[in-house]
Length: 258
Ligand SMILES: [Zn+2]
Image (cartoon, rainbow, N blue to C red; front, top):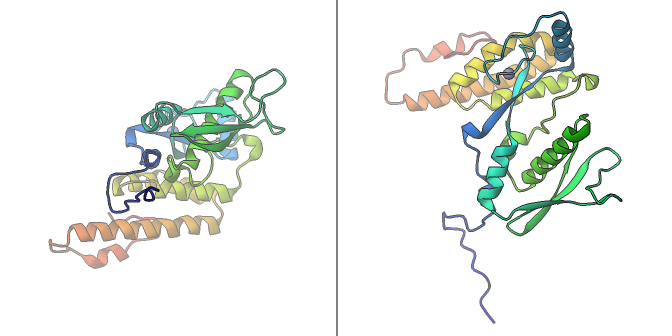
């Protein structure tokens, strides 16, 4: 008898309470996860056994191989904060219980959960990434929550490349993945300064680590991002006289023209 619920696409205020889940996370809630390749982890461990620890990383304050790349991620505290902001009554539950009444893991050691936010339930899956004991359970829960929250769009921009597990050395990272990580790192740089720093810090390592084709792929992405920053800068300076518009083309493939 009533008119159908009104849809108001023109209002700017979100009418969907779940839209909160998709809002970008502020910088201070984004953490840096170092990601070593299998070879890097092996070398770092050998060095440590020989008494040589890597220097403390200025980016993540961890002790890892100096050429490891960093992935942006949202930690458990920030994610929980977001869930509470969206719906103070959010909840999760395991999909299955074992005979002991506790959350059941599947044959792969993974945990399926249902995450409910604002009355909407979506599935998530997490695993312990090789951890054992109590830490394994916490890791699996955290991973499943991240995975389920992603189904609601939380931090989708950070996670679109895959999960956050640091690869174990057994799964020795194929160079294809290393190239993808390099590209993700470059694309994740929000401004020209960060981008320049990330490139300067990593390109020598990438050159050594990656196959020539993969390195070319990374260079192509770098060129694309440089072009965008140059374009942005040009637009910003549109009202000022340009000193040398041709200068940007005199650079080698490994340099950045700003
Ligand atoms: Zn680091």
